[in-house]
Structures are given as C-alpha cells and as structure tokens.
Amino acid sequence: MLYETFEKIYALEKQGKEITKLNVGEPDWRPPANVIQVVCDALRKGKDKYSSSAGVYELREKLAELHGCNAKNIVITTGSKWGIYALLSLHMRAGDNTIVLSPHWTAYDLICKQLGGQTKIVDLKMENKFAIDFNKLESAIDSNTKFIILNSPCNPTSKAWSEGEEQEVISIARKKGIIVLVDDAYRDLCFDARKERKFEDNLFIVNTFSKTFGMTGWRVGYVVVPEDIAKRLTSLNNITTTNVPVFLQLAAIKALEQKTKVAAKARVVCKKRAELASNILNKKLTFSKPDAGFYIFPKLPVETINFVNKLLDSGVAVVPGAAFGNYNQHIRISLSVDEKKLRLALEKIAELL
Image (cartoon, rainbow, N blue to C red; front, side, top):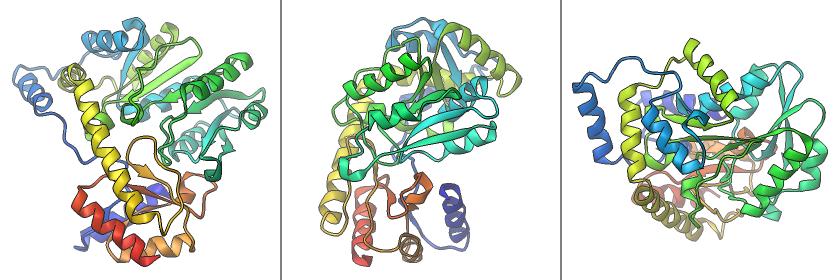
C-alpha cells in the first residue's frame, strides 16, 4: 500500500496536479555543499572505477571508530535497504521468520516474503505510547525465528525506545540465541541526541547517510556485523551490486567529518516541525508525541481510505496506516517539506476532519 500510494501520486503529478507530498520518508534538506564538492572533485580526478565490494577502507575505518569495532566489521552497502535485504538473505530460509515490532516499515514484510519466510508481528498500542510488551515479544519467538528487527526511532511512529528498553530486546534475543537487526536510519534525529550504537556480537547494525545528510538518492548505507558475516556480505555484493560508487563513498567520508553539526541542525528542524504539527492537529487528532525524526502517526476519527483519497484530491498526500501493519485507523504524515507548505498542508488536514 505504501508504494501504491507513491505511484498514484506520480500519476497525478504527470497530469499537472500540484501535490504537497507528506507521504515521502525523505528529508527536504540538501547535503552539505562541501560534500557535493567532493563528488565533483573526485569525478574530475577519475575516482569512478571499481573498488572493493566491502567499501573504501578509509570510510570503513572511520565508521569502525564510531561503532567501537574494526574496519573488518564494516561493509558499505547500496543504501540501508540493500543492507537489510542482504543480511536477511544470508540467514533466512523458507519457513523461517523475523519478529517485527509494529507499526513498522512495510519493506520488512516484503523482504521476508521474497525470501520465502514471514514476519511475526508484535503489535504495539498508541494508547501505551507504543511501549514494548516484552512478554508478548518473547512469546513470539520460536524455533524458526532468525531475527528481531529493532527500528528505533521507528518509522512510522517516530517512537525512540529508551536505552534500557533496547537492551531488554537485545537480552531476550541473546538468551534465545537469535540476532537483533537494528535499523538505525533515524537514530541521529532523536531529539535527545543518542550516542552512536556500539557493536555487539548478536547485534547487526544497519545505517544510512540518507536521512541525516539528505543523501537519499545517493544510496550510501553500511552494516556493522561480525567479521565472518562481513566476508559473506562482501561476496554477495561482489556478485550483485559490486560496490557503491567510489566518488560517493569519498563524499560520505567528508559527511562524517561534520556529522555532529549536521545532525544537530537536522534535529532542530525536525523538532520545530513536530511542534508545529502538534499545535495545528492536536485538537482534531490523537497521536503519540514524536521522539525523533519527521513522522507522526495519528489515529483518525473517520474512515481512513476515504479521507486519504479526499485529502489527495485537495492536493495533500499522506499514507494510510494499513501500510504499516494492523493500523487501519491511522495515517502517516511526513513533516518533510518547508514550514510554509507544511503549515498549509496541516491546516488542510485539520479542515477536512
């Protein structure tokens, strides 16, 4: 449903209709100018040939410093989505399952299904601020469970679980002998500024340069995994994606040099937009206050699909909550346009309720 929404919007835009796209999980800020300049300079210098399928060593070394591990634990991937797909593909077989805390990003379901497995959903309640039910989580684990996916902060709720809650998930997985795959795409956007996640044996870390640095179309991601898994993933890269373009990896090195500053600026923007959304919508909609990022996931007092279609007809796009699990009464609103457009779009949502 998420991707069908995108296609419908593209079709309307081709017809000349102007749409404010609050459906897209893409920040509107640009990469830093000096990061773009690195790409231009690297291309002029001929840095456009093949490289190691594990990634440029200098980039891997800098990422290893962040995560408290060795460069041998780092593999650069074509976006974090490929990192997730590749890691699941190395472990899941037909009949296996991965446990997902829901609401959740729909790609987890689609990847597991593509691999012949399934997701086992642990539904969380907005009324409980999407707190993790650890008894329910542990009960969902069976002999075919390979992973628990932990996406914190979460797409679509912008819920960031506490360090204690995250460690409880990791402890349950360790006790059961399974892996926690952490999707940290939005971690830098936590309003309370989390520390870098450190490497642990039963923890596969997946991250991306897309959200923090506004580099979504660049497709630069990475994973932090045990060395034997890194070798297997490098071999898989070698026969599939080969490598992320060298000039983009060099730009990622420059991005890391200013990560603290860029992330802090992004957090300010996200928090300001979340406050704007709350001020406009809190009298009409119920939602859990976001801890990070640029999503809110309100519950509607009206039928969702009709409302989403009516809103789209008025020029504003959002995503039905059913795209993220058993949340048919919800919608995901992405606060990822400039303040003027965002205010008008949010007022339109309030007006139509």
